[in-house]
Structures are given as structure tokens and as C-alpha cells.
Amino acid sequence: MLIRAYAAQSPDSRLAPFDIHRRELRPRDVRLEILYCGVCHSDLHMARNEWKETIYPVVPGHEIVGRVAAVGDEVTKFRSGDLAGVGVMVDSCRECGNCRKGLEQYCEVGSVLTYSAHDRVSGEITYGGYSKQIVVDEDFVLRVSDELPLAQVAPLLCAGITTYSPLRHWKVGKGHRLGVVGLGGLGHMAVKLGASFGAEVTLLSTSPGKEADARRLGAHEFALTTDDAQLGRLDRHFDFILDTVSAKHDYNLYLNLLNTDGVMMCVGAPPTPAEVRVFNLLGGRRSLAGSSIGGLPETQEMLDYCARHGISSDIELIDIAYINEAYERMLKSDVRYRFVIDMASLT
Ligand code: NAP
Ligand code: ZN
Ligand code: ZN
Image (cartoon, rainbow, N blue to C red):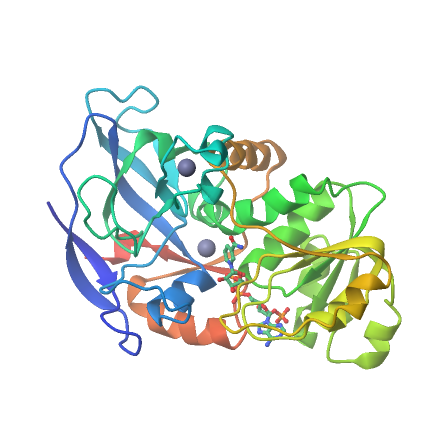
């Protein structure tokens, strides 16, 4: 079936309309009519091949929500008309130790990404959510509640789970001081979730104009990281720091803000390697750690948590024709705080 989409054909081409093939339903497949798709900075890294792993043409988009249009014969979880979501993965080996634990994002064979990967059965390139429809095995489709505005739920499928998972893994909550670095898509979800878990949240930002928003989103404090005096006051202040920065930056600056046994959880994925001064880890027995999205069970848990607590993303709804400008604004840290594509605009 030919489906309307938006694709980049090479690292330096703009995204433009492109027709893709979506497979006929396999017995356990769900066909989703996509209503909204969030715009993640990873989409930009991938469209421009910044991580050197892109398969072209690439149809980005892994914050997908929509309505089930059809299901295969053996599907049990979904019926036509249900709301549903798809995140960063559409398959994994399902047999390795990590898959069995519901940690499909760490599949030892490699999980199949929603776009720019190869389908395990047909070998076809996977295409993401900047499109009208997607076909996914029901095990990788999430249930979405109708209690929250759907467009604002879309970013939970990546920005939400990517920040929820490390905060839960390291049990961040009451009595902890959490620093969130960067107020973009991931950062604003980290502020909301961290505050909701009971932590005292400080936003560490390069943008002076974001202080009021940070506080409105739930941050208790704000510090401008370009101001040495403001950073100096936070020396050894934090139990945890969640780094969501998309571009090259100095990790050492933030490590020194951690107290003894503090953990810096990195989720931002700048394409270039960084230098870490090991003395910043030795002094204070600090840890530098990373975390990738979240598995299927935890993603469902996060969606249910957000529905119960009324947590969703602050978004700017855009037409798909605006996507190239949205990418340019994302590069200027000018996102308030997630672009979401209204797929009705893709005709
Ligand atoms: P985003 O909306 O563009 O936000 C990134 C924020 O980082 C900016 O708003 C800005 O915040 C800050 N920033 C940008 N350049 C900076 C610099 N040079 N120095 C310091 N701060 C800077 O991006 P996003 O969608 O949240 O994604 C963030 C990163 O996470 C990307 O690299 C993305 O690929 C990665 N990611 C990882 C995972 C995972 O599984 N680990 C999942 C999704 C995304 P301020 O204006 O407040 O400084
Ligand atoms: Zn993402
Ligand atoms: Zn596996």
C-alpha cells in the first residue's frame, strides 16, 4: 500500500513529500492512522546522518499517536477505532535476556528502530511517523488513554519515556536534588516528571529567557550555565543530574555540581565524543551514566502514570510543511517545548 510521507533523501536535502510502501497486515499487525507525530532532536540527527547510521531515504518520526484502522487476525490487544501509540522501536529479537526482561531497548541483537532500520521479516527499510499510516506488530504498540489531549501525548512516546526511565531506575524522588540540563523536548518532560516524583528540581540552561517557563513547568530553581557565579553556587549541590543536551558541551562543568555518590544520567546524544576529566569522578565517587529510551512495559507504565497525573507535553502544533523550519529552530534552542506535526496537514 502506498502511503504519503515526508522524507530526507540525503544528509543535506530538506525533508519533502515522498510516497512509501507499507506492508499488508501480518496476523499480529496493527495498522495505525497517524494523527500526530512529535519532532525529536534525534529525527534531526538522523535526517542529517549526524550519527553516521542513517539509511536513505529516511522518514523520521517516533512519537506517534493515532487511531487503529485495521488489525490482523491474531491481534488481541487492539480493535479498530482504539487510540494507540508507537515509540522508538517496532521490533526486537524477543529472546535475549534483555528482551525477556522487558528491556527491548537493550536487545542484545539490536532492537528494530521505527525508522532507518530493517524489518526483521522482509528486510524492508522501516519508515517513521512523518506519514499517514504505520503498520506495527501489536507487541510494540502502546495503549493511549483518551483523558489527555492527544497531540500533547505524542511526545511522551520518546521524550517522556527517555526521561521517565532513568529517573525511575535511579529512584529519583523525595529528598533528592535533581539538576536537569537543557530545556528542550526531553528537558521539559524531565522537569515535569522529576517534580512529580517529589525531587527538588533545578533547571540548568544556556537560555536566560527560559526561567519563567522552567518554573511554570515545575522547576524550583533556575541557573544560567553560561554564568560562572551561578554555577559556582551549585558546587556539590545535586544528588542527580539529567543531561538532555543535543550538542557538544562540557560534561566536566556539570560533574562538579554533583555531591558525593552523585549520578550524572546522560540521555542527550551529541554526535561528537566528549572529554571527561577523570578526577571529576574520583573526587566524590561520582558516576557518569547513560540511558536509552525505555522498554515496552515501562513505556506503558509511563503513559498510564502520565494519564493518572495529568502530565503531557507543552507543544507547538505545526503543519508538516513547516518541518524544515522547525529543525532550524530546534538547532537554535527555540522549541517551546516540542513541535508536534498535525498529520491532517499531510495531504
Ligand atoms: P531539543 O528539544 O533540541 O533540546 C535540547 C536542549 O539542549 C536545548 O533546548 C538547549 O536547552 C540545550 N542545548 C542545545 N545546545 C546546547 C549547547 N551547545 N550547550 C548546552 N546546552 C545546549 O532536543 P531533544 O529532542 O530534547 O533531544 C535532546 C538530545 O537527546 C538529542 O541529542 C537527542 O538525540 C537525544 N535523545 C536521546 C534519547 C535516548 O534514548 N537517550 C532519546 C531521545 C532523544 P537550553 O536552551 O535550556 O540550554
Ligand atoms: Zn526521540
Ligand atoms: Zn533481544
